Image (cartoon, rainbow, N blue to C red; front, side, top):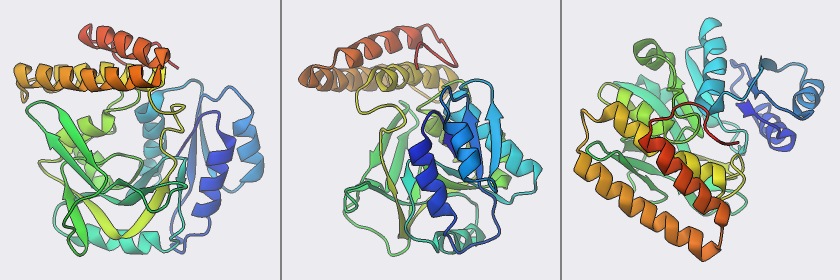
Length: 289
């Protein structure tokens, strides 16, 4: 998991991880260049945890890749990518998830994700990806659920268990996006060979938007607007420029209405700057945070 200036959420997540019943694991915290005292406080609170310290904020993928590299170098068969704002209450969760890797071609698995503290509201159940436009659909719930699991075309990487075979085949997470849409790019790369499942008999809870400071803030709108263009430039051999632009304009229009309704000028600035930087194909860390 990543820590960036957020002692409380990271502490709570580690506390819950230490209660899980599956013992053959290491907890790895990657400190993503924190500028406060959260790293020192975490080290003092959890001396038994592995810490990977980065000298700067390398974004979601860059930070996670540092932790994944540690896990792979130390012989891990699976890596659980976990947001530090995830709450775990099912302490037998790994015993429920791991057996599904015995199925053919399964590379990534997530539990069903619910909101927190509103624990009955679904946050993620199924991911669909239109490879022709780059548009992804994040289904919070589906009308007809199968008994055990859901097949996905992409997964949000907030609580995803990944086989090391995936990294051996395709490499680590793409770092050009810094934050947001790297999950869609990852799905573009791996989905033709590996299956991605949501397991329905276990769940975690997600304090959504904590890492970016809330909905429609400047960081979130900037990177989601910019990275849609970066995704197009990377996978335009599979996309239609007409479908991409149509979907992008529809998305921008909806975002604009939401920003205006909330009277959030920061969101409007981020949306505008992200669109410009995306068209210019500016990669990696952008104007924020």
